[in-house]
Length: 263
Ligand code: HXC
Ligand code: NAP
Image 1: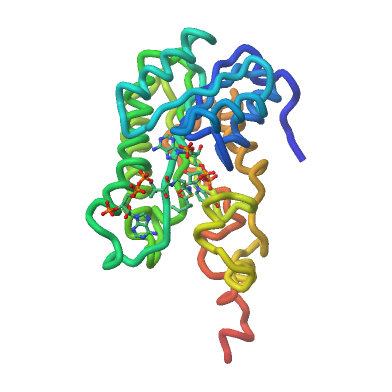
Image 2: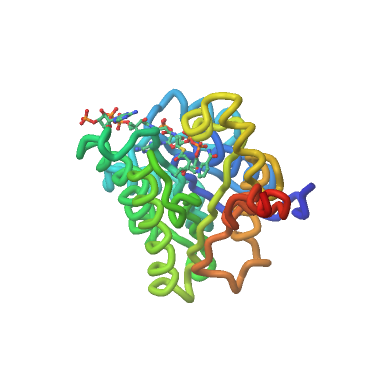
């Protein structure tokens, strides 16, 4: 299914914040498969160690909380010391839970904004002088909730909307040396995110019907997009947010049926 050839990322150094599980770990593994030197970071040191082992020889599993600027900067310095200037930095750490706004304390709302939005600022601001310039690729992992108001998701909607604008501003300020883009995954199978947002079979099945491509995505499909955005093929792409969502951004596909429209 891939258009990329082995060795495409040879000698590039890659840091993935929040890369110790799920989609971001899939991204880290794909860069490593294509020859990159890869570091992943999350809060839990054992999970980070296991992730590095799963990625393969030479990978670094580091511990940081992206809400802590100094610790996150130190983790990225460790990666740059080991691998050389960073060619690719992915900011994917996120927190989420279903709750109505009236069911969230101020701290609950702030916690998700701090991890997702402030964390992305910390990662990108912190890595700037560790980057290979010109040429580096920064990618933030955002979500459709950034543009689609979603009940029970006030925290994540606000945080991801902020990330989308941060991507655009940094793309303007940091060009031409650095490209800054986002990936907006749709619902992705086998992830913590979907276990939290669609915990039961009936929710999942109703959900498939609304997606134009009638299925959830795979982690590997998001990873391919990250490789593309960091490849020379994307040399003129900056400030964009690439939806990898089976067309979900277009709206509810069950409304596209003429029969339903006439009913
Ligand atoms: C209401 C809740 C809550 C819930 C936590 N809180 N869960 N409020 N309903 N279900 C409140 C707590 O009571 C507390 O407020 C505040 O949130 C912080 O909680 P802590 O547990 O102290 O925070 P912390 O240990 O920092 O953990 C962060 C977390 C946790 C987000 C709450 O779930 C986490 O670590 N998540 C990481 C993994 C994850 O979420 N993966 C999915 C990402 S996917 P008080 O007032 O009591 O102090 C994703 C989905 C896809 O993002 C797309 C959508 C955008
Ligand atoms: P996941 O498996 O829970 O991954 C989250 C990662 O971030 C883990 O490595 C976690 O490790 C780390 N992390 C969480 N809080 C952190 C913090 N404060 N500091 C540092 N690291 C932290 O989630 P996922 O479902 O694969 O989602 C990955 C990304 O895709 C997120 O940005 C999410 O919003 C986005 N997304 C997911 C979906 C989906 O279908 N799953 C859809 C749209 C967008 P620790 O717990 O050890 O810290």
